[in-house]
Length: 123
Length: 281
Image (tube, rainbow over all chains, first blue to last red; front, side, top):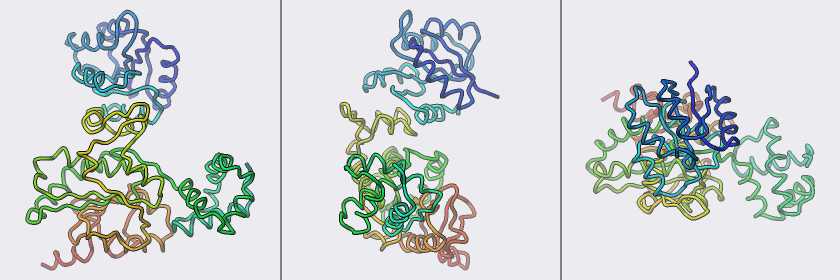
């Protein structure tokens, strides 16, 4: 069965690039433009297998989303891969402590994204 | 730039002579795609001009650079994760027990390209600090490509390279960011690994036999005769009870009588002589 990836990013271009790669990797792709939109989807029971999560977004940041997701006691919490331009150790450590399963620094390519999906066990 | 048959033959001949690898006509397309920017950067206007320079042996540095450019340097951290799981769960525990008296471990990442495989082994061992406390551990990475070995020695990897196969926790645990250049392996890793330029068809590496040799995705580029020659060399370099790992699509069986498959761990090849000895005992 095809797995679903929710791409959460305020950049349409990044969402389009990620969709292109993910569909080539046989994922069903859903999109959200900010953390609030993504959280609403999850809390409504529309849970993907994996979430590709930007850090800096309007309305609700990736970190706020991740903390809310962790507090929401959802069954079968999706895997979360941060996908961000923040590439310093402090941000990476903060993401891991908040419960991110993996962390991908932009720019990324197909090999990078596929590797991260393998590392979290969805590809 | 167009590649004439004559130029392709000269370049392929140079490559085969230096590396022993087959450069068949099916791979000639790589000459154009790989070497066109290479030639332009050096003001060489055509592949015929390049072939003439090479045929005269007029520029040894240029020849080495071309060989480097044509070698396949594909690699990544923890490539084929199942192999590393097997090393972790089965091969290292067995070596820890059998080498307990000497407390010395020598691992060889042969045809290591830019060193990600050797560093992956180093990470694995460094994370088992308690098991290996007091041991002398040597991880040697070798490759025929001089640029790949230079990169491996630098221990510096691009942001894309560290994101292929390397879990993020291990990235921040074992590498330091280098502003605008990527990530460099920490001294705790670099102290475990050394790198050498080495041709697998040449004399063995110095320093003694290895307890574990990884030689993955190298055999496939060689003719049956060269495969045999390479496996003979690997058999001389492997400790009598050591383990050899090849790539997923490669086998020692049929290419050399020096190795047998380990019945308990099919991805591992062991010395046939040692297997006969232990079976007889």
